[in-house]
Length: 374
Image 1 (cartoon, one colour):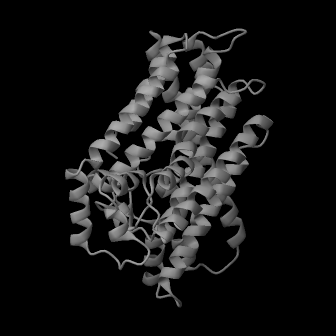
Image 2 (tube, rainbow, N blue to C red):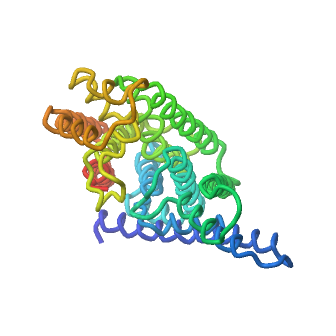
Image 3 (cartoon, helix red, strand yellow):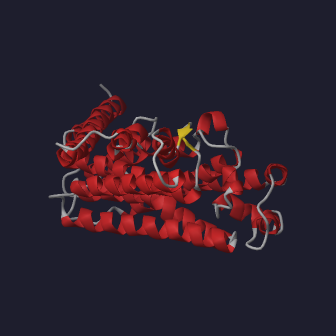
């Protein structure tokens, strides 16, 4: 078996372990809920709004497990680049797949992602996620179906927030016993994610679409917690007494920015049948995305003219007009050019790694993130 096959097979084994850990984590929440309601009169609404079922549904809805994959690759990269005793790539892959700590950390980052999705959908008042109703919409429907009292939308949003809180609590459980360096980096990642979400809301409210602001949001909210930080966490778990290799940090930053640009391109130009979200949703929601930041510059302030804080809610024809202007005016082309530049810089960072097999895996993964359709 060649190194690529060994690394790929070990990755599949690792991801199976992460999925099993996720099922166990969600199951533990079911056990707690069952204990709390034991002996109580059955309730239609209580049974129809179990928080752990929201988590299970989202986990089963087709996520790509980007962050656990990043952990695995970071672990692998640190193992083969150790200066004292670098490991054979196949041996390093087998070690990663069998490391229960890495499996638990993979479970944690995926639960953190679910936390972020649930909270984000409430804040954005999103209607769909991965082609399905968002959790708060689904829960509001359960409230209506039960004929319960009160505002169904408020009820759905409140329970979706609690479902996110549950995902975060279950994620934190997975960190028990992990090296302190990993826990410190995890804490930094979580705080960056929350602050990035805050900037997203504040800049949307202010109508800030300058490129410095939109890039700051993308780096904190998307690039760091999706790519750069998980790579770092994996490396720290493999070698907790050593700093993260500088080349891996550079690679993570470049690959993360490419991922964020790709994400924002999909938010304006993506196919709803593939993304599971309405077309041009980032324009509709006035998102301070990197692509809208580029558009603000390239189109001479056209984004602020339509989406600025004193402007009325844009109509669907206005949204489509801006989207066409972005496509025809070179905005999409400029975003794709920057994405390609990020990938080139990521390739240059990996070039210092002596292990060609692991370097190749990192680059294949980064290109897949940047060239995806959903």
